[in-house]
Image: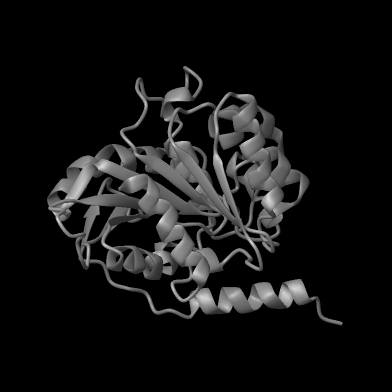
Length: 293
């Protein structure tokens, strides 16, 4: 007997991945590795009376694993551009395509390269975006990310609260209007308890033996408060990253004295948030607009 939840998730994933990739208007490198690139999408329209438009930085998901690159979120990037945003779609180094660290499949992430890349990309974006997207108002930058990319988006906004010995730590908070995290893997401890993405969080940190040691350098739930406006959008029917993970992050923020907005969408699973044909993606655009404008 088939599981209706699994069937729904498969159908939602098929819909989200059915859209052909959308070519960017420009691409720029932020480092020498082939994965150290950013694709830029110019706004397809501008708001009346606005000469400049907000910049949305997109960090894709895929459990930090090599088979999943930025191409699958290019339809979302295009949707944001059609909504009048300038968009930067960031690529970064992900896991090895061959199993190791005891994993049954492609391992999640690279330590420290995944974080090296996100930090380098965020540091380079003001310069790169100024060249590629002259209409972008860098003072109105919002970072968004889906699933594993949601973790990276939250992490990018929290570099100023990293431990003092972290190589990615910044002296000041980032110049962001906010973060909109989409079904993020936002609490690594809860994610591991629930077996999210086959133990991807532990793999990202170098394996179970390094998990506790590195948790404070990567786990969004441990990097609070940030002082950055943050919203989380999550589907109630998500079986890939259950909404309990997001709820735990929001609870951790509250304990740290910070309010994080949480929008739970009824009847929505993991993938409609990045599917431009789904109503959930329109909600995502509105959440971003509320912070950006």
